[in-house]
Image 1 (tube, rainbow, N blue to C red):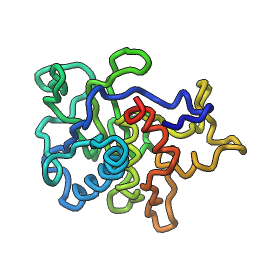
Image 2 (image 1 turned 30 degrees about the vertical axis):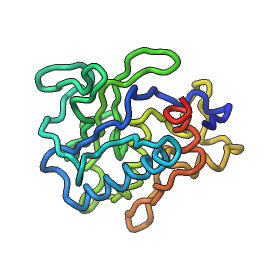
Image 3 (image 1 turned 180 degrees about the horizontal axis):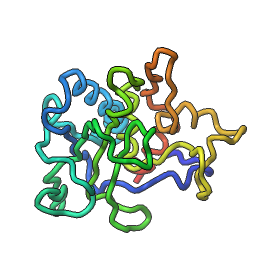
Amino acid sequence: CVLPSDQTGTFDGKWRMAPVPIAVAAGQFSDYEKSVIRMAVQRWNALASAVYGMPLLDPGPSGVTESSIARPSFVCGNSADNPPMISGSSYIGRVTIYKNATWPYPNAPTAIAITSTCPTSATPLNIFYKGMIDLNYQSFFVSGKRVPDLQSILVHEFGHLLGLRHSCETTTSREGVPSCNDPGLNPAYKEAVMYPVFGFAPDGSGEKRYKLNSNDEGRMNCLYIGS
């Protein structure tokens, strides 16, 4: 566990049990996209398996599990059309990844993806009981639009799903959260997969940043491996 003194506020919470099961919305993702999802999962699982002896994410026994549950309008709470993920000490559902041809976040139109988690208040960190990942296929990933590197985006979003906030923030006033605009910012924060900004080449292709660095690994270890 390595947590720099200026990153003490960069956690959202954690899951009580690992590995966290994930799925994709049924019929939305190609075999290629599923293979990229598995590669992104493995970036975090390789770290956890090497140090902790178990994975952090479970995409299913083969390929990536598909979920027939329609995207809920609100991820938190439990209902017939938005069933619980956890019962007692077991997972009975999965965090689902959705493609969104119509982006449901009008206040964040330029977001490539958004991960939502539902926390239960706990000390020292909140405990997640449900989550969801949305990919913006209205403004990105489609013909005529910029095409981010899908593996890089998913590795980043899985970091959020597991409880990491960005390595720094472009606008923040929270204690323990460094500013990305600080000229003295630790270079490792910019090189991290959890850095908040992804660049694009002139041809619209996205920056590739999917290899965990020491800052990504150190902070994740504080959530699971070092706890």
